[in-house]
Image 1 (cartoon, chains in turn cyan, yellow):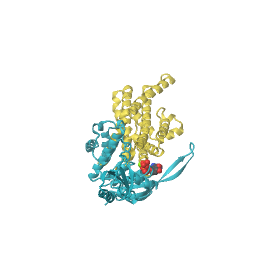
Image 2 (cartoon, rainbow over the protein chains, first blue to last red):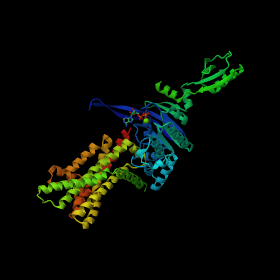
Image 3 (cartoon, each protein chain N blue to C red):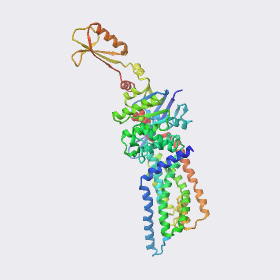
Image 4 (cartoon, chains in turn yellow, orange):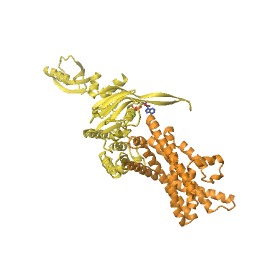
Length: 316
Length: 258
Ligand SMILES: Nc1ncnc2c1ncn2[C@@H]1O[C@H](COP(=O)(O)OP(=O)(O)OP(=O)(O)O)[C@@H](O)[C@H]1O
Ligand SMILES: [Mg+2]
C-alpha cells in the first residue's frame, strides 16, 4: 500500500483584483488542476515547481486543511475527506519553517501544546518535547521564548513539531527556505535519518540539488499540473539530458581522436564529449587514448542537474 | 479523556500567552476604578452630594463588566487573526481536534483572565463599600458571572468567525463592544435608556452579567434572573454552531493563510 495516493485533485480559488479604492473584480485561479500522485512508503518524494505552481495547495489538500473541488486522496490508507482525523493523526506537517507557534511561549511549551493536541497527556508531551528539542539540536534554546528565535532555530522547532506524535508520514513544505548552508545541511541530515527510520516524506524545495540528493522520486508541477514524474535519473533520461565528459590528454603529441578537442587551462588538450551513457562511453574514450600510448591528466564528468530538468519542463 | 487533554492544551497555552501579555489584565483591573470614580464624582456634583458609596459600587461593577466585555471580544478576535498570521491556526486545524474544543478552550481562557480581573475589582469594591461580610456574596457572584459570561463567549465566537472571513479583528470586535457598552446599563440603569436601546440591551447577554453581579453582591438577586441567564445560553449554542460552520464551509474552502 502506498503512503499517499491522490487522484485528479482540483482546487480553485477566487482571486480578488482591485482597481481604485473599492472597485474590483473576481476571477478564479486554478491552483491545482488534476494532480494525481502515488508516494511509496519509506521514501522521500520531491515536489518541485515554480512559485505559484500549486505545491503548497496540494500539501494543504493532503493534510485536510483545504477541501478539494474534486478528486480524492488517501494518506496512510485513510481518505482525506471522510476520515480526516485519521489522516491528521498519520502525518506531521511543516508548512513554513518560520511560522506556526505562540510567540509568548517557549519552544518546549509550544511543542508540548502540539503534543497534547495530538493526544499525548501533559507529562508525556513535555517529555517528548524535551527529547525532540535535543534531537533537532535546539538544546537549551528550547527554554527560550519563540519570539527570540532565529530563522534556523524556528526551522528546527518546526521539524520537531512535525515529529511530536511520531507520525509515519511527513509533509515538509520548503523546510530549508532561508537557512544558511550549515543549518540547511543539518535539516537535510535530519530528513535523511528520518527516512532511514522508515518514514515517508513529501518534500518541496526550490533547491534542486537538495531535492535530487534526497528524493527517490520527483514530480515537477507547473500551473497546477504534474508536468514530469520519475526518479531524478529517469527524468534526465526522458528529457534526453546529456552528461558532459572532459578528458585531459598529457603531452602534445598528435593523436587521432575524432572528438572535439580544445586547449585546457593547463595548456594540454582536453577532449569534450557529450554522452547519454557515461558509464559506457568514458571507459571507451580512456581505452582509446591509452592504446595510442598517451597519458591521461584528469577526467571530469558533468552530470546534468535537476535544475536543467526543471528548466526544460517548466520553460519548455 | 483525550478531548479533555486537548481542551486543556489550548486553554493553558492561551492562558499563558495571554497573561504574559500583561496589558489586558492591567486594563481590566484599572479602568473600572478610574471611570467609576469619574462618574461617581460627576454624579455627586450634579446631585449635590446625594450620591452614595453604593452608587459608586454599581458604577464600578458596570465599568468592570464593560472592560471585561471589550477585552474578551478583542481577545477572541485576535486569537483567530493572530492564529492566521502566525500560521498557528492552520497547524491547529491540521491536528486531530474537534474545532468546538479549540473554540471553547481559547474563549474560556479569556473568561478566566476576565474573572481574575473581576476578583480584583470586586474585592476592593466590596471591602470598601459593604465590608468583609459581603465577600461571601462576591464568591457566589463569581460563579454566576462565569455562567452569565458564557453567552458572551457565544457572541465572541461569531466575532471570531467574522474575523476569519474579513481578515480584520478590530472593527468587528469594537463594533460589538460599542453596542454592548451603549445598551447594557453599564453606566446608567437600563431603565433610563431610550426604549430601543433597552430592547437591544435586554436581547444581548451583557446586561444580565452586570445585573447578576450587582444584585448578588447587594443582596436583591431573584430567581427570575436565573431564567434569563439560562435563556441567554442560546447565544453560546449559536456561537459554537456558527464557528463550526465557518470552519467547515469557509476556512477549509478558502484557506486561513497563504
Ligand atoms: N487561499 C488562497 N486564496 C486565493 N488564492 C490562493 C490561495 N492559496 C493559494 N492561492 C493561489 O493558488 C496558486 C498556487 O499557490 P501555491 O501556494 O499552492 O503555490 P506554490 O507552488 O506553493 O508556490 P511557492 O513556490 O511560491 O510556494 C497561486 O496562484 C496562489 O496565488
Ligand atoms: Mg508554497
